Image 1 (cartoon, one colour):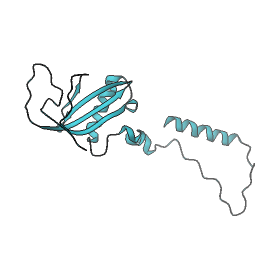
Image 2: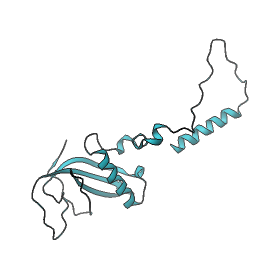
Image 3: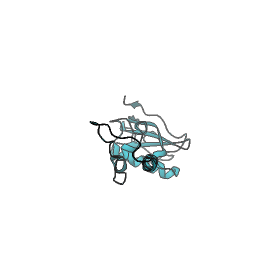
Image 4: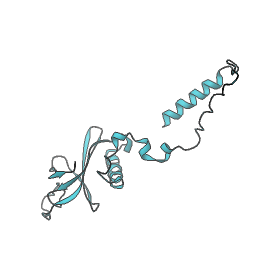
Length: 155
């Protein structure tokens, strides 16, 4: 958004430096449109989804937006990057084989029940961050090589 504002400012500056009166309005023509007021906030300034490319957002209905945002914030903090610098490798509603969410910890017991949840894999600086979540909002980062895939991924 900043680049767009800088470009718009340069265009306005160039237009201001052109000699006025280079072209006269022909009878019956309208004056050129007034440039937008770049000092006022736009939807892209206030709506994070308006500034993120669609490919970076979770598929509609797959992962709740609030949960995805929580995971993206955590991933960005861990990787030391901005949320906008994350790429989405996976964001899906899934069913885990137990309450470990496919990422068991050693010496820990888990209920052996089907557990609906979400699988979100984000990429920052070439590193995959594998997040598992339950429908109740439990979120955990699964260390590389420790995770198992879900038994069912929603299509």
